[in-house]
Length: 485
Image 1 (cartoon, rainbow, N blue to C red):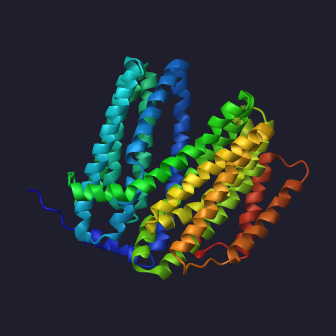
Image 2: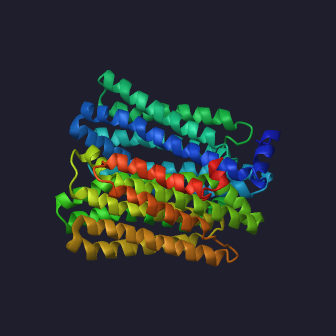
């Protein structure tokens, strides 16, 4: 019988990092690395997507997107939240309990994802999608199962704040996938090859991850009913909240297609394509601090208050800065994407407001996750969905695409308010200083004056406003020391 591997000296040192003052700066540095890696991954994708579209043609590219969407949806429904729950539990459990935790987490994630992929393939057969799509779903599904296993092996890296390695593995996957696409395009490969290549890519990243965690992470799964039940009970409300949240981000697009013209829907979709990329950044970066939040929530209420207040200040600074620059640079962005400006510019400017609420609420939501307040997160997401839907139904017939943008911002604002109220209720001793918000408001007002400069283009206005905004914050001492480091 295999015995549980004892933590090595390196593992003990790295896990102890969460109890030291160095944990905060390490998490912030890791957050910056995750954000940079995410942006680099987007740039790599931009290099391969045009090649793929031109090579496959509209019909086969549509099938390619269909398969990837189907597999992603299945994986999201069967696995959502388990990775984050795993990071939280690994960060708070004593070392002897981590081995059994990870073996059971590996077992439950593998089983649920594999079952989901089987159901996805069955759906493709029933829907009559054709041989290429059915086999493509099987290959892409196998790649997804391997990716989920790899993500489970990477949990100790994230929990120990070894975020440079986590970022490197993500970039390795993206680099291998893009390289494979380019090679397949050059050799004139058919559609099915682009799905099949996902398997060796996932295997390569899995092998690299195993090499990094070997000796600190058990390599075989366990199927213990009690531990599985505990994991699933912990994740279900949180998983439901995440699923609802992802739905309402796209609900407005669906309702727009029913309530407005295709042209107005297109105006909204242009802006949403930009926002949907940017709003992934706070979850990625703030999520890097989850091990610190979870340990503080377990052991030190005062430290939890400090970390949350710092996260709120940082997300407020970055969120407002990005929103300001996007609002001023909206004309340039829309022209790059659509070739012309027009009504989509005003829509994107309204949508940019949501960056502020998304960035700030992310820090509050991860605080609730660290405190095991999953039901509150479910209530927040459901309320945001309802508000967004109602506002869309009311505003779109009157204001068209701009009404949809306002509805999206309204739903995000309500979610932020709920997150703040629930966090204060869960952690009554938490206090937030108004020092940074007041200085952010002043910096925003000064940077906004750039818009009054005659003849200054959209892109120069955005860049100059960013310089003024962050310059004022630096001069007034509003930027937290951790962010400077």
